[in-house]
Length: 452
Image (cartoon, rainbow, N blue to C red; front, side, top):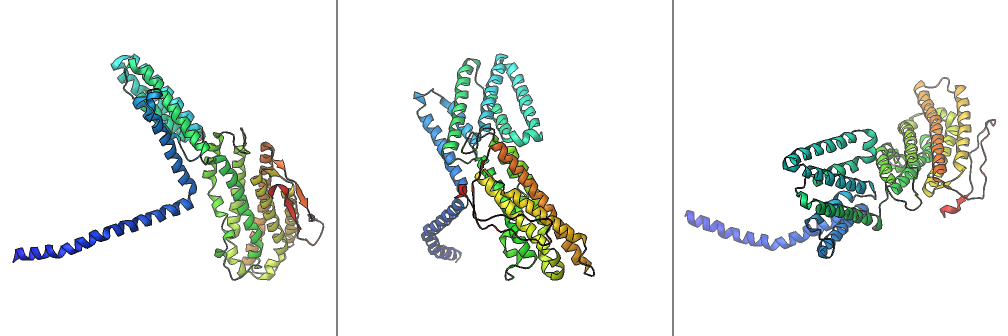
């Protein structure tokens, strides 16, 4: 009976197994389609990463072609693998010559250290090689902890340590050393050149261009907030949308955490060759100064945005005392930053931002005169404090905006931005401090020819 039960169980499992085998191709096809959709979605969201993967493959294919034709070249032999290692460690996302320089110097120094160790015999080599590695690798690692070197050369120093150790630990004999040194250095140079040429010739990613665009984009994000702040705070906007539904009020948040990426791109940009409008000795450090001032302004915006959630709870009678001046300050700062963003993006200089800053300062003087009169006697102290805090922050924002403009003017001078040619079909009327009433500036049309 036991045998019959076992036989019965086996017979019953056979149809299930056959069904699973028949369904296996369909399952594999569904899985393949799913993976393909994920890959396509990733390529659409991150096209640069997809292109970088393609460039790594192209560089390694070129090395393999060189390896295939090595009898007609220099008979590299197994040393052709150094070109492969060089491509892997040198070829990075952005174009940069620091990795190539680090690989070349470390390769030459490693060959020299290995030659000196071989000259001292087997026993001497066993002592000198660890000493060289300890001194060089330890010194370079210590340099990496220095903030000055870490920001500029961190990745290059990592490649230097790796290349030096790999070269100096090779076990060739003295009779082969000159030939090996020649072949190894040549393959390192070939691998570095292939990596750099692939980076430059195939959809190059310029860290300097990315830094330039990011600084301009961050300034524009601040401008969008100021252009919509007064309507939101004084309840003049569409009430069907909540603050959370309006993306322009939250785009500034990415500016708060942009310091690390800006510093990294500035370091990489210094090692890039001349390209486009960016010549040698382009003032990349000035972009970091602009970024710092932009983040200071973004922190002021972070404080202002906290008052938007409770703005509808404050009586209109209290808000109306500062509404006119605050509206002008907010709009003028928005116009200033938007003009500055366009100037940075197109590398042009204009006097328009300074005119808007002057108008904002006049509005600040009017706002201060209102605050000195204390127009809220008898009002709720909590509401008064909140409104006064908003007014104080907007006054600080004008100073931040002016500093951003000053740094951009300095960049325009160092980078030799071209003057923008404006066609005015209207006039910008300055706000007079002596007028009791303040008039909002309107510009009928300002068309930069260069932007068309």
